[in-house]
Image 1 (spheres, rainbow, N blue to C red):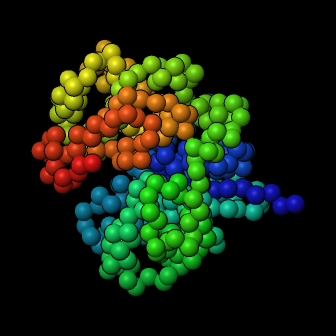
Image 2 (tube, helix red, strand yellow):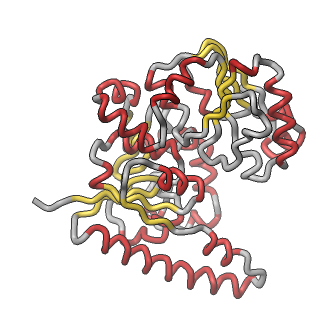
Length: 331
């Protein structure tokens, strides 16, 4: 029987969690392809060995920063050709003639470049964007997309995408409904053995002691990559967090860093428990951990929380820069 290898294109820790929950044999049958620094940290600090292909984003940034438009177009074309050849060689080397199945986010750079070589693709949920009908409408209205062949469309719209795995956060857009398979990940978690659960904890570098810490806290604060995305300076971010934390007893707070977060804030908030694991917040709900309060500025992770008595959603109005950049986001 022909052996199968799964090539997985993912950039978010959330999608990564969903994928490894669906595939109990992921450390043996999957190859993870990615370019982001934050997701690279997950793999670098993971206690589970998996096959990876890391494409540093710096190479592409150097290309798009070429100021001359004509030279930038040539540089982009050369880079895409180079990256396609590199990816095909690495995938061929790691799959050793096995049958290949493709999973992940079809809108990432790597699958876009390899799209003509891909026959079938399974999309994995990446959050609320998969449920936004207006996002699909805006995508199809873009000038360059109006002239694309149907098979070259992304966001799950290509006929090459046979299945879209979603968790059922909300109503599924009509445009993708025929391809969607809803999976109850909380039920899936309950069915897993303790060994399987421990493997997922190990993958994200989460210890048993971390679970005990989480269970003792009354308030969990979900941060966002405000500095990393250059929405606010370090000083502005720290000042904003200080303002929010005044609403609670510091000893009750668990400060959950965003999976894309680089700064730990341990020096700035020495009295507050900082949770640095890249594991997505949704795992706590699957585990059945309950909180008195979940607080955030505008993290969409809180929109489907069922394991908290109270949600404190501060919104973008808490800082004029956030309000100007993102508009008024409120719960």
